[in-house]
Length: 201
Image (cartoon, rainbow, N blue to C red; front, side, top):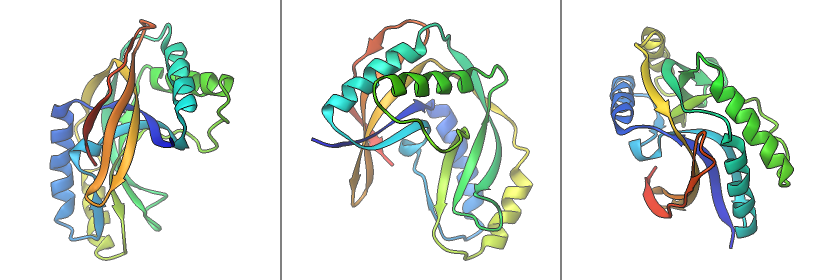
């Protein structure tokens, strides 16, 4: 069976509430954006697309190896923008600041361990962010750009990263349904095998 899955860092509910409040302000622009629901908010480290059960086991092994020796660390939500740029926007995002550079080190370790178990290296440069919404047309883009410019210096909201998760995404008419397949704890080498539905995105 093929599974559509990705590696991600989850966000605390308090932070999701803050981000939802930011979205509500951006929605006042009237732009044509498909906004991410709170259940779908996470920091993606690697997206795999379709992967079989054997691949999933390999990913789990890679995650356990990647976190070995890396302690929990703090990230801060910082800055809002659009990908690829403000002139040709497709995605509205909120950035993440990592003063300790642990996130980049962790991502590098994940990529190294995935390569050892047969997954090719990620071509795209890792840019830590949370997707706020996907732009469907250029309607009211001027209004949205203005709001983003006004909000780019938002107060940083900090949260602690203690786990990495392998998450399955099932695309349904009502939106994506996320199931947590596997969780590994930073700096422990241990794991939590937690197979449950984590929500709709």
